[in-house]
Length: 313
Image (cartoon, rainbow, N blue to C red):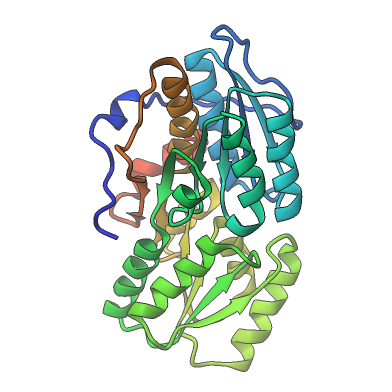
């Protein structure tokens, strides 16, 4: 996993900033280059993580003056349909998450067969090349999970509960597998991340039933907020940030978070397609470009908190 490195010079193209708009499949910038890029994710409505991904993509589209069309669906089959619709509409490039690679393989390969360059982001680091994507921007989730597991193991963790909030997600499964590799007593718990009340009640029941659970590991910031509501004595750590979880880290209610910098993922995915279409550039030199993992805790939260409030971190 250590062979994956952040390509030199990538950081130079990052420009902090954010904008937002609602709706699906709509043009989000004035097209001046003639390039139309479809940006397709498995976003669950209401998950603040995706606001950051989308803000990064929108900023890149504004900076590069391309026409960005954003769409999303948490259902794997419907996400595949969105990709196929982008192919049929003859966009110049497609950026997509690959959280369920088997379900998306047909539509991604249809894009490449049509001569449309595809880049992956956020999920699918081990599958993107097989599917035909040219580049990838995201975190190595196995490394991220292992890093988290090693840190809580050093703090004495014996029986962490790893909460998986989306069935079939290769990224979430990899995170928990990484935690378990460092803490063999890790137990996975499947919840419905689209229903916050159900997540909270499921966690309450599990923590009441098993008092040996010493850490709750949530795999997304909204799920961490559900875990706070569930109560209990187990320590809480999470993947990903939003403004609320960042404040809870500062307040000492969350031990730490692992940040994969979703704004950067969105920005680089769009920018890489623009540069590929314009110049044939390949960012990463055939390797994934890593945007994480990065620890956020009390030692650096004062620096990072203002950026979470701007929706850029």
